[in-house]
Length: 82
Length: 333
Image (tube, rainbow over all chains, first blue to last red; front, side, top):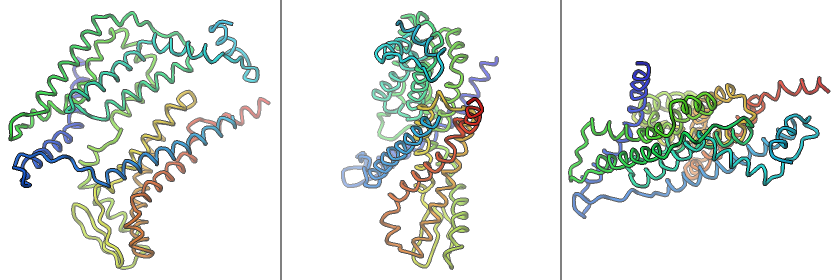
């Protein structure tokens, strides 16, 4: 009974956690399919790879590298101190 | 000197006269432990198969389970690298369990391919189908249940309780895109009003236009707070870097403090994001609008990195409990 309850709680927590993404993807797909851009109504457009996306990835990668390096310096100093 | 003797001598010896264990012996011992320990093996298999699932069924793709299993694997490997206690027995990992695991994964991949890629021209996603597809994203963890016996899982939970708790925290908090997307209509208003209240102290005549994306209208620059400005990038950066700290310092961290620090850190990043937008509004209206428009993306990353480093500078010693150990060490000497 306890396990059943735990499974139910888990399902209640996890399913809504993931559902918005599925809905969002469905919506995007619908919008892509419905768009008539001269290639026919059902032409599926490729996902745009914008400069902003590229910059965000580069920015995150740089920030992780710089932040990680800063942490490693702090860690090294703390190990020396102790 | 054999390996057990090395470890015993190392543990018994005072820190000044630590016995050095040869590197190749340590590496062999460590790899052997990872191979022998059922928890590490099960997590590694789960991680591997999750990767395959995402390759063969893109509809299942979800970063969180993959990152969480990788994080748990890192923590287990880290634990095995410093914990000299006896490892479990992989004899529980019978071949029938592996076959059942494989069959279950194949079923999930097959199900996801049918449900996730409709062939009809008009999408036929009813709400129940969407819920099943959403559940499938986390169902990928279920086949792992058959890999160990009940007693094996009990041992896993008992021995690696801290690691399991850390992975569970990561599972519900890592990259909270859904939570942000859901909360954005309300959160955007709170954020907009906060930024307006702070920036209005420095920019006279600053206006506030409510909407799905609130806009701050200033004499020199109007700033629209889009969902990309929600601070999610800062949260993601914080989570990645904090995971690095947790994995590398797992043997030294005071775990409750780390958990408290994690929650405080997430809140700090959101607060820092609000300050970042306020700073942009002030600079855009008082210094140079062009400068803000051109460099606000890169400046955001620099700002978030600085905030994280400042946060770590303040909290790192507290995480490790160093402030308590040092006076003790001083008294002993």
